[in-house]
Length: 330
Image (cartoon, rainbow, N blue to C red; front, side):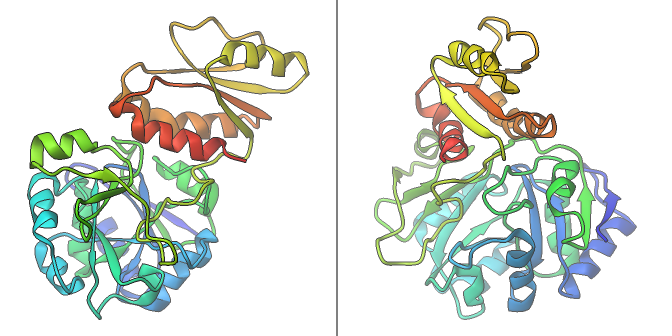
């Protein structure tokens, strides 16, 4: 049975945090909030504990997980080399929604890296996440707290909808602010490569840290260096369509007797009777913050089809469009 404990998202003190740390130290699994999405945490240096994460999620062993740290001492222990560009990005964006890929040390189990020679590290900005890492006294391996390829969770209720009975504990610290997963940057390449777009864009890396990064993928024939690289990911059970002609598509699906949810912008026409209308913000960051919550809402309504009005292109929308593309891919 999975227990849920409430924790203050601003000042996470008390018994709940201590209980969660004890679970991790015993090799158990704890879901906890970060500023991006809820993570499913395990002791990063225990292969057995990390293996339990893969089993709970139904995650393929070829998909590496991010290791969350609370200070640079863990970075030094978990990497064999910390590139200068990684330090420059970390000084600017840590704690925050940026994951940095660097050469791993021998202390990192193979299961964490999918057998690769690099490790993905992040220092989260959420007070609960940082407090949990410090209370446990160890780095925490934590992919998103959902079933593999499914919609990522931004509330404790989302976690329980997919993982109840599969994990030990959920720390409920309220809704996550950013709403989508971290930006992943490979700092072993020149120039650094963005393996997964996220809340911090390439433009912000340049403007705030003076780092030019390019879109990139793990090299052919090598284990992937970043999670979230699968073609289908972040996906609802319902058939999901992203289109620029969403109004016509919604009416067509409804006319054929299918139950429909429509993620639409306020400026668009009203949804037809019977369709679930879910209004999306015009701002890219605000859109990202509610995207998974809206998809969970549509899934809870058990609709057959989710139609999503395609957001505009542009650098601010890159991460959102990446998630929508993967969620709608058959």
